[in-house]
Length: 404
Ligand code: SF4
Ligand code: SF4
Figure 1: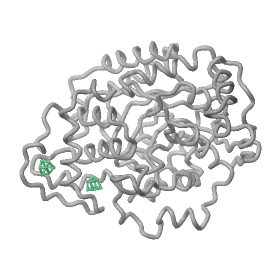
Figure 2 (figure 1 turned 45 degrees about the vertical axis):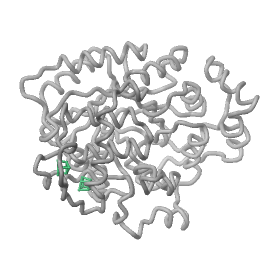
Figure 3 (figure 1 turned 30 degrees about the vertical axis):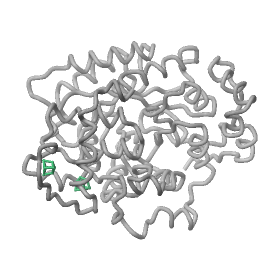
């Protein structure tokens, strides 16, 4: 492992937390946004890994920008040594990409790595693309994304959310990825997965087209062992692996009374050296400092192990749905409950109602749960599915414009 340690004392002395909210803080923020940057941390003390055959060297902590709205936070992340910014066409209905575009416009293009994602409507029940579709929809979205970002190209372009093998080899998608690579609009290509992850990683290796996979990976997943093995096979084949959902729903409970130990959760994921970098989402300076501090030492302390309740396995349901699909098979209407549960996590865990809403909207115009008088769906992982479904389904009736 290429271990380079963060100098904690220096970081705290000059770091984000000590500056934010003070007069010095505004000087720092101005410096970040104006492009004359302060040497806030000793970047050589970070832990770096190489993103597979892309050859891109990244700190093991990157930035998932999805929930962030403050451009000064993104600027501060870059100034602190973060290199990879991860966004998507759909985040905050495009405002996320626009905000990033504003932050990076005066920066040296070689000083950051940019990843975005496009989606393409799939059949929610089968996970398959319609057979009569072509590459145009992908291209239209991606060209808008480039415009918002103010860039001629991105470093990594992902296609959102694969969970069945057939999508990995869907010809229009592969043609699109090949085209944007040849045109120089994307240096590297990949896809994201937060369901059936191990199979998707293996399918990516077999396909041979993808450079990077962005996969859910955390201490609460039932299939984490299988994902770990698949990641090992993928990295041996030269693929880059980026981990998301490392913090497993943020809270153990819906009431948000019992937060998951974020630092410990991130350490757990990064202990696997086949994870080349991670994209925890942070929306505040203290969260960023916490995530960066993980690079001091990836060893889990006894207290951190206890906080993660590792000995209790996956029995504690919390907010993290395993996306296993067992529930879906029990529903007479075959509702895509895993996606509803993901929306639930976005709403109650991340407090990102806009993302929760758009996730539900993806399920189509009508979801039968609102008219269903009895739900007997049982989750083997302890999720109270009938209650959670009724909780989250209320969001569908709220117009998006009320949610920001
Ligand atoms: S709610 Fe339970 S059964 Fe359904 S996908 Fe999530 S973990 Fe699996
Ligand atoms: S509420 Fe009814 S339609 Fe919705 S998941 Fe439960 S059984 Fe299926």
